[in-house]
Image 1 (cartoon, rainbow, N blue to C red):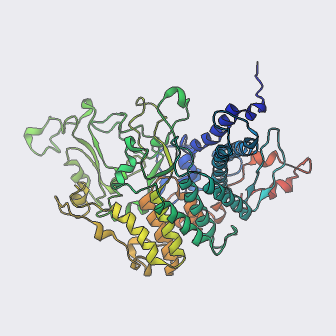
Image 2 (image 1 turned 45 degrees about the vertical axis):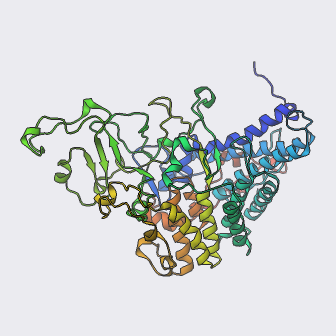
Length: 581
């Protein structure tokens, strides 16, 4: 028997709260499957495909990336429009709710409406960046709807900004329930929406001459008006026991309750890992994670950091694996033992270094064989062996085979707000102000006086063993970084002016701060640099074309469309598709 759900339930206090919770729940979509990296980190300059996975055509831009075959395109579209419909229904129905628990006054009703208007803007913001012109529905539907006109990009941005402005004016600075939208989240996304709209060079997004002023204003309010603070140590951001910290502005909540997760936990810990299990002295365990080897960093990513003085590089990657499997520890042989007495003896003990990755180049097999551990220098990296991004790892999973994790999925943190402010001021030509924000992040990124540096500091990067001096002065930035063609910034050929070099410098700085945090594809699309930078730095993406700056509109959506009460003609269906697909 199939039970019928009445929409009248949403006219009750309990029902409307469930509706609001449902609108929030779609925020988990980004983190609960392979759509996370497929839509946001495949096909970019920072990462390229590793050994495994079924969706590599998003990285290499083959013809399989089309309106019918790209399943995650359809999933994103339907998930977010489902959430938008929930937002619309709530916004319409909340004023009439007569409640006694929460909805008993106008202030509380407006609070929930503001949350929903933020969420509606949030979902549309992703959709317009991925697809361009999209249907702009601002009323809820409880029956089948077949007619959807795509609204111009400018109109979508206008709606996004209006919703965010309402949310900002209504929401409190903090909420008693962690995870609910706050004034700071609305301000952060206002800054980001203005920056994105105003970043257009050739595209028409409805950009205004005041967009950078607005982006700078709202970002600066987030920074100065609290309650957010940069954490002192970059590595503290990824401490699983420190998730609800002062830098997080917006996050989707997860936990490790198997019953509550019901298969929808955070899976991003799976995707950025090399194959460590099966290496000598190693086996899979919970702390090191389950390696699905979907993405590996490009040479651009490895080289765009000042690896010696900027702690963000080695605090973003795992380079050492300690032996956890005594049964596979290798033994010295007559060919490689440092002395005859060691022949037949284990090369290392349980808990010792078993695998060690470095950035050394041109290391010979003979040199590698002399080490007690498995040494993987940079010239031996491949699609199985590479630096593992540690930001998403989750040592709290229930067991070694569990795919779902309980780490929260961070959408916005204050580190990005600083970068938004910096880019907005730089685009206005105020480079001195931009550098204030950049160098504030650089101060956090530096090794502090007295801080022990990683072994790579002296082993690989040319530092002195035992040096505990600050590196702050060594990584502060001046205008010289974009006044001329600084070879360390790996500027592409198009960066032939100070203004253009600054934009690419900011993209580089976003890599250094935000690597692997699911911003990159939209960052490159936003700055109209997707094709050039991806083709230049991603060895898999040679087939990328200008039309790939937008995703294809899902064919399943187009095939269901009507106009004036009749199905679309073949020509009308073709006109609904983005160019090139």
